Image (cartoon, rainbow, N blue to C red; front, side, top):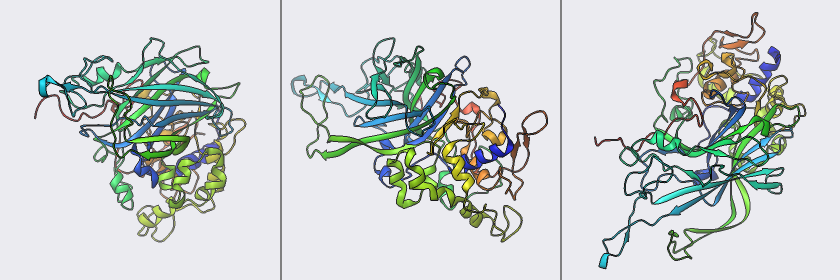
Length: 513
């Protein structure tokens, strides 16, 4: 596939300079009150596990900044929520296929026979003994989490809906979180037993699905970033500090054949994830959880009803967190891509991030060596608006593109094997990477910092690293410094195959300390 240097300049400047520093944690006022439906990261890429290159993997992360030791309840997903992954396969910035996930959390009501006359007394813990390694545990789990997957073609609410299934029979089950080594002796084996085949209506080939706790896969010095970017911008890119290194997230991972996602001769798909809650909620002043096998009628802490109302949205990383102005953050989370130009276009035409970086770092010439001279590109950024909302000619722009903030992937671009991937995506001359979809390894923090300061579009006053796609013999890296946040992952920090994000940090070691 041919791709001009100018087209790539527009592509990366637009698609990467709008998202910025980190995964999307607590990015809007309302979502801080509902962490179970807070989407943190969204990945979409051609599967690079050997033998799976004809599939696309989607990973939607929710419930941010989990402390591994967060017992006794740990981190179940919300049974009163609807989690969705949307796919646009005709370029109109509206969903054509939606994969919906609904969860059921069954309280087993485990007891100990220590009451009067040997009556059972309910225990306060998630487990009363070892769990795993199989899907059906030994009876020691007090809460079992299962889920259903729906497939809707057309509009997410009024389209044709059918249910996906496990072709091997049985439920889709979410593994218990990584409580610790005494409760779950071999967590990798236990979690891997919860990777299920999935039969998707309308597809002749099965995919795979996994929902469960994973290690936070995004390196970021979160505190330093939001302390007025309190970083050494041209320091060494290393593994010296990653403030979220001990945190976990909950991943919804789905692998789907490319042939089930694309339509006609159009290889480009767009994707994003959302979470929705019911419009009405009444709190129960006398809550009681329903126990399996117990008397019916317990209503829990709340009664919900009404239409589904979207409260979380995520395509490209961190658009809402550092691009959308504070008054519009909740609106962005509730909106759909087709309305983005009217609602949020000014935030792209006049992005504040380059101006802030210039003010914070170049007052004394830290970036350019020329104190007092702005290194922020001039506004309005018409190039950003055009490419950010439509995709890019020759890379990931559909033939009939419409405006909308979504992550776009050209499924015709060959997979880059894991060992050859660049964590800088295009800046490392890896055209199969961000912004052409997003893989786990991509350090979009560093990519964004470089692009907003002109690494691609010719306004670079720092001599930053970039990629010369017109170089003799093929694309070649133009060496230079890389503005960065000091945190770094390598491909060894991830699994070599589905679900790609690594096993979660345990809440306790296998043996007493």
